[in-house]
Length: 280
Ligand code: 13P
Ligand code: ZN
Image 1: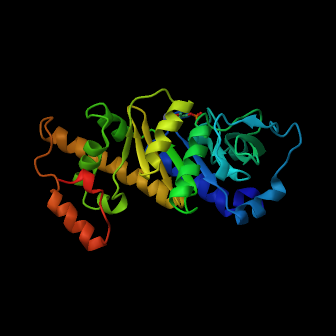
Image 2: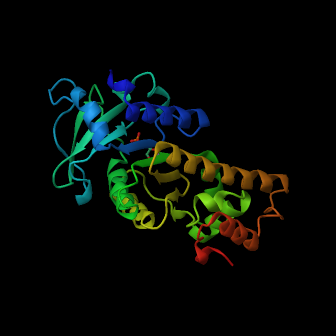
Image 3: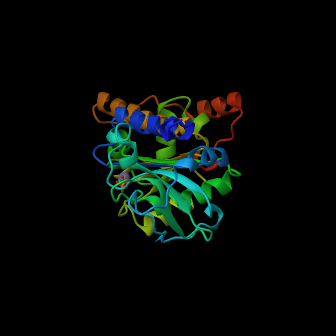
C-alpha cells in the first residue's frame, strides 16, 4: 500500500480539496493539521525518512512549548502551498512532522519535498491542538484554518465581539446552536503567523471550538475531519445567509431572525446547553 492510500492521508487530502471547491482557499490561503493516532503512525511509519536529500530533516524551534504534544506526529499543509494542488502534488504540498520530547521543536519525517516547511501557522496549530486535546480529553485531532469569504465580509461590518457574532450566527439558521452551543470566539484583527495570534486564539479555544479571525477568516477544531469541516461550513453558511438577508432588506438587519425563546426551544429539544451569556 502507498502512503497515499492510508486513511489519514486520504481524509486529509479530501478535506483540502473540499475546502478548495468551496472557494475558501485562494492561492496559499488557509492551512490544515491532523494529529495522527498511534494506528496512523504505524501505517505511515514505513515511509518516514530522515535521510538528507528527501526533505529538510533538521530539528527546528517551534517558538512555543506544548508539553502534551511531545512525541506526537502531525500531517500538515506546507507554508505557501496551495490547497488546490494537494491532490495532485501530495509530497510537495504536505508533510508529516514529529514533535520532540520537550514539545518545543519539530522535524519533517515525510513529504514537503524540495525544501518545504510546515504552514506559517504551525505554532498556532500545535498550541491549539494542545488546548483542544486538553479540553476534549484527547478527542480533538483536527485544526483547520480557512479564508471563508462570508465570515471575512461580515467581519468588516460588525464588532469583533463573541456575543454579537454568536447571536447573529445562531439566529440566521436554526440548527447552528446545536452544532456550537458555546458560540464562537472572536480574535480582533492581528498580524497572521505569529506568536501573538497563536496566544490570543488559544485563550479563546479553551472555551470555543471555533474562532473568527477578524478580516482574515475562520479557525476551527474537531475530533474528525468531517466534524471540523462541517463546523467551518455551518458557520460560513450562516454568515452568508445573514449577509444575503441584509442585502435583500436594503442593507438593513433582517427583521425576522430566530428569537431567543426559539433558540432555547431548539436547545431543549436537542439536549444541548447553550452559552447563557449570549442569550437574552
Ligand atoms: P501558509 O501558506 O503559511 O499556511 O499561510 C496561509 C495563511 O492563511 C496564513 O494565515
Ligand atoms: Zn490565513
